[in-house]
Image (cartoon, rainbow over the protein chains, first blue to last red):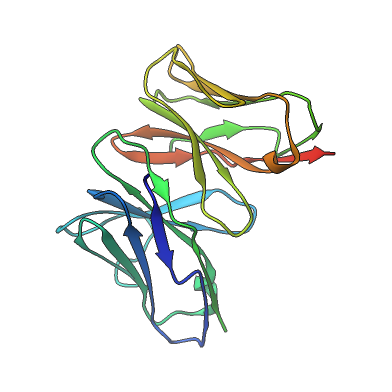
Length: 115
Length: 109
């Protein structure tokens, strides 16, 4: 149980393109979903927390107009990197949690490469 | 901000050996978790701890939530080659997680 699916697993696109990443909880309802960014050989950095039906809460230093998050249902959250540039290249990982105090379960991540 | 300390950055052990990893913080947390991440994949939950002093096992893995709520350790017994990967500790407060920098474990056959 507690399977989280992330799509796509990797994407390469030109600078200026907007990229959408989907995160789905397959066998449970996720009241809260989280988006992280991970640079090579580093830890996970929380970007934002989203609750179904409400606006995402962004961490300090994360541009909310750059990284658009939508959590329209209890099983789906999306992250859109708008007008992506090479410095946005990274490994983006989502996680989902059911009820409060339940652990976060992670998707397999999306490798984003902006040329 | 809150930080979790994991060291060393890398560990090298022989297949069959036991290994212990520690994670410490200057802050108190209500939840401690251990995740394993393989290259190019997301972290996989190994053990979740919710109560100070709690000792929990998952197969060859054992983890404890420190009594002070500021630390946790993970033990892997009788290591096998597939134990290689990056082991992250994470600690939670108010549903958000703070992650350690991870320990890369290598297992020599």
